Structure formats: C-alpha cells, structure tokens
Length: 208
Image 1 (spheres, rainbow, N blue to C red):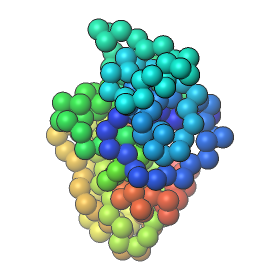
Image 2: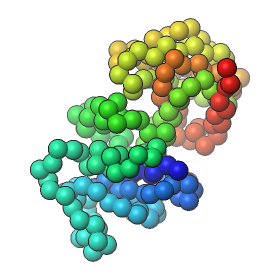
Image 3: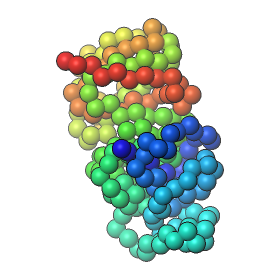
Image 4: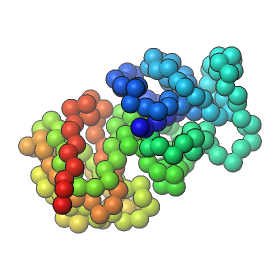
C-alpha cells in the first residue's frame, strides 16, 4: 500500500481518492488545512505546526509539534515517516526556494507515484508504459533522478528518440493526436498532465 502525504502550497480544489488504498494519511503542517478543505481525514500529522491555521486543533487531537529548529523540512519528516511508496497533494506554485527544496528532497528520498497540485498532476514512470489519454492532450516529461534519463517514444507528435532528460533538459508540451502513446525510459521519469486530464489517463506496463 501507499501513503498519502498532504503538504502546504496550492492543491486541487477538489479530489476523488479511495482512501482505503492508503496505509496512512499524513499531513505536514499546513497540509492539515488542505486536508480539511478537501474533506480528507488524516491519520498522522508532522511538523512544527507554525504554518497551519489549525495548530490548536491538531494538539487537541494528540499530535505533538516538533521543534521549529530542526534538520528536516516538514515535508521531509512526512516522507521519512515510513518506507512505503507515497502520493503527494500540494506543493504547487509556491515560493521558488520552497519548490527547489521540494524537488531536491524528491531526488534524495524518492519522488511520489502521483503528485496532485492545483495546476498540474505529475505521474512517476518507472519503466516502459503505454499511456492512453484524450486525443491532443498535452504532456511534458522531466527527470528527478539527478542524472540523465534517455527516453524513446512511439505515438507523440514530436517523437523522443533517445532524448536525454536531465537537470538541464526537459521535454515540454508534447501531445498524442491519437490519444495513445508508448514511452520507453532508461530510468525513472515524471510526466506532467493537466489535472482535468489525469482521471482519464490509463497506464499499461509494456513487457519487453
């Protein structure tokens, strides 16, 4: 099972998830405000609670804030809370230093399987996969591994033929007119789609 981690930053205004699929639902500080806005019941809360508007509520629920002077961010504390894979809600369109730190954390501790933000949904792709989505829907690809990831595609308008995704190279605003494409990465990569498109996406692993 996966964990669901909810953090600060812009998140979807609504979301449909089966919470029974998660072993834990963890709010990191002001992620609790987001959880409340989305009607999601948490099982754990971490952080110093300096950003949430509901600090007293969290304390009444039995959650103990950590010291403000700490070695890890609230998001890192949530990710390090367990070893299961995780989905992430929040973290969108925030301060640039927070965004860079969040990306750095993902490179060190592992990226989420799905990352839900207000203007983006990002899906982790760990191997060859066939993606079905509405015809013409836009997709972008980038790497969070910290090293080059060569990518080959079949079915995109601008085919990727060994395109080297890296810190310095991102594949932006591609699309599939037919509504189905295959992607063959040499390592883990991330795929960005519009949030309204993601529920219509289907991912089928390709056996090589």
